[in-house]
Length: 95
Image (cartoon, rainbow, N blue to C red; front, side, top):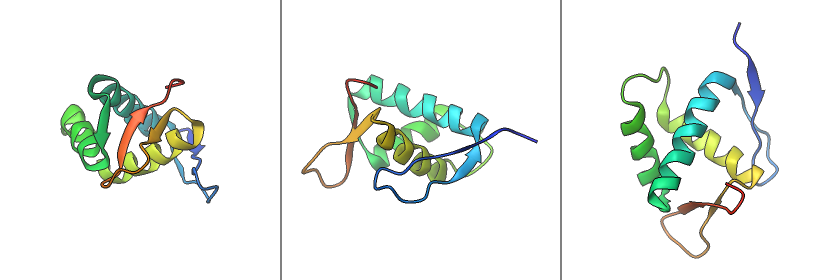
């Protein structure tokens, strides 16, 4: 049985229990894409992660990107840029 972790939510809502291995793959991809691009829309980030992982990821990349993105926001590693529609994301100084 694979190791699981409970994700956090920036608004204090209930997190999700997901595979740590899948979490780590998506986390690394999100941080890599934001590091390269500086800022990305949420859709742009999801598309970039899908392109980076190709067909190697078993599961819904979009769902995992959403879940891990919320966890990374709650940890203070990434942030939403205020006043942007659609949602824009960037690394924080801690990210």
